[in-house]
Image (cartoon, rainbow, N blue to C red; front, top):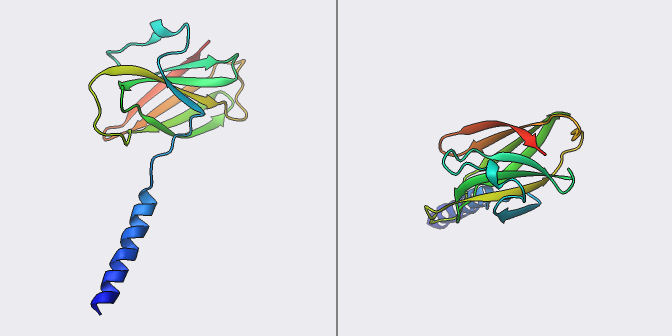
Amino acid sequence: MVRIHALALAVASALLLSACGPVVSIASNTYPHVPSGFGQEINMFSAKPIAVWTHGKTLLSIVTVGSVDCPPVPTAISAPDAATIDITFVKSPNSPCSVALSPTTHEFKIPAGIDVSSTVTVNVHFDFDTDYDYELAVLD
């Protein structure tokens, strides 16, 4: 009987751990720093992200500000209409995190149906211990 309980506990633990799996970024590319020409747009004190069209408006770049070692991880992107993109970031699984702040650029393929020739709004949601939401106009 003890073996059955031990086996059941082992199976339940394995299922629970596999459901929690690693956090996977949906960004096509992530790198430190800011896209060329947009450094003046970053405010290291407010840590407000910026949204930028890059590579001839073929990519959307979101620049976040945070720990050099633990940048937030984008986990979801959607386009509810032709002028709106919603992106969710979660807390970095890295640990420990340094207190040194730095910008990080996350590049995304533009969701289908987005009209890059019009004014596009990006709603950025940081799903952390305390949620933060930003509504950003995409800069050219």
